[in-house]
Length: 71
Image 1 (cartoon, helix red, strand yellow):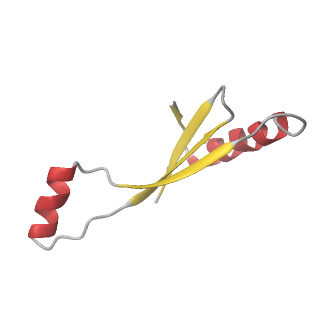
Image 2 (cartoon, rainbow, N blue to C red):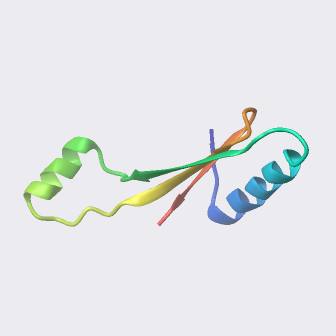
């Protein structure tokens, strides 16, 4: 899986949609994620610290998979 910055991700996603116009599909998934491990998040919750979550966006056409992180 290739993790891209947001602009190159959108360009590649556009290319995926164009390649699959006649035949094929593109799957886009979103995942609520944090850079911290589960143990670190639980400790932060215990101490009342705010946890910053990000959105992991993944796309695949079955052959190629790309991803990016949205803040």
